[in-house]
Length: 445
Image 1 (cartoon, rainbow, N blue to C red):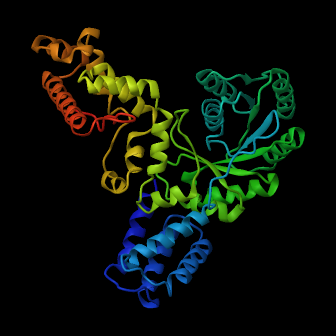
Image 2: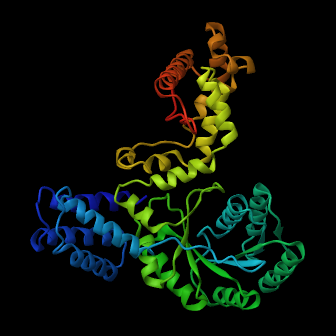
Image 3: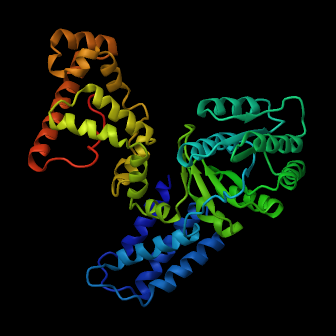
């Protein structure tokens, strides 16, 4: 995500390396490189020029503190301006009425239906809401079925009427049902087209007029770059939507949509979505995204994801086991599951300052833990709870059951024992408090 832009900006900041003071001369080259980097990231030239003009104005005349280099000061200025360009601060959903109606709009293929499921899951699991999904796409053959599958996965109700092709009536009937059933949120998934056309715009506008939504979220594929911004403008001119959702942000995107869309339509980016899993939806924080673009990581989001999986009672139980040196493979597997629930492994590592650049060319699969899980699953309950009792014959059986070589099992067992010893040493040195550390990268193959 934004890898090319990050590299280009880092290269631009090197122009100031070793300078003792920011001046008009040494800023000029840096500004020029920043502008080029933004344009290459598919940011409109007018926006890129206005952005760099503002950065230049703020940089010139700034006095560098004793401990701060001109390069560091320029990074801070660019970070602050990038955050402002993308909206400045996070924008909350307007949830007041009961039910609160959220209308989802966008082109076909942008990820509207998947986002609708993700949003319902987010509102249910993280905010304790009771959402109703509404299938108002009456044209795409599999749209209703897809929404039904998503609703079943997250266990939320879905309103589907296969007998009518009137999307406006479907939306009105769904809202009426939500009022009867006590649903606090209604999420209406509308139809899209391959390109902006009048029929689609009229239908969405009619649904808006019929149900008077509290929120209209425009879903856009971030990989389409400047085209996404142009489409957003066309939708906003007709719908006056309340916020933007960027999908496929984990794809090969240059970042133009994220950097340009707020400036163009003057509406906030409210959510960013990555991947197909229903828990991969994040509130958009412009300052955090600016930090990630500049290679500063995003520790705040990383901690929040960890806290979302944190179980205090479970952590205390695990703490006691580690204190007594009884940490076993059942505990280890449980910790792996918590890490997996936090999201894509490479994306998580990229949130650690300095790590993103180091691993950008390394392929870290979401299946990275499968080999370890296969070995643990091949163990009997007795073996999982008593690692020290796993002898050579048991290791041979475990390897065969997991489809691994005996060397893989031996390496995993050795590294697991080393981890236990390290935990014991840390416990002796300073005791333990709070949540135990989660395992790091997977062991073995």
